[in-house]
Length: 232
Image (cartoon, rainbow, N blue to C red):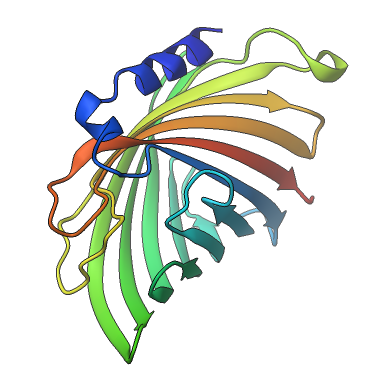
């Protein structure tokens, strides 16, 4: 209940200007994340989703993002993968995004857990208008997150869990985007359905803009339904 109340507060706290500048105030994201353990140290994660289908008139994005993770130490995991994103808008865009990252889990305070994820992305964006153009750039992003202890009970008597995170993105270089983010603040309410399935609702306040001339403001509110599937 606390997380849901905070999510509503995030939405209500948007600046009034964000409601009047024509930007996409509300976005809906839906995705499916599968996890498959290849060995006791290696795992595969597949991330597939659609963004903006029912919440914005400006664009809709579909994506796939497979990656492989190496659990090097009990507190350190290295990741690598590639994302493919296609955005349907006035000038459609295809983005291919290889990346590498490192996840450090620290500290652990009783049943509370903190993690820090640093990721470097090589972004390659093809824009299709009267001609096809390609822009490439590197982007660094850092996310700090805290996980709550499990609480309550729901389906099958299994518990809920929560998380909160803050993420920052490096400044843009060659790629000048219309809808782009600089910071994201997210609250998560999750529910364990059974040993293999989890449902999560993410509420995110994102710093972005509705055209390339505007400055970045905390104007976008994202509701994200995330379905997690542990295959083995």
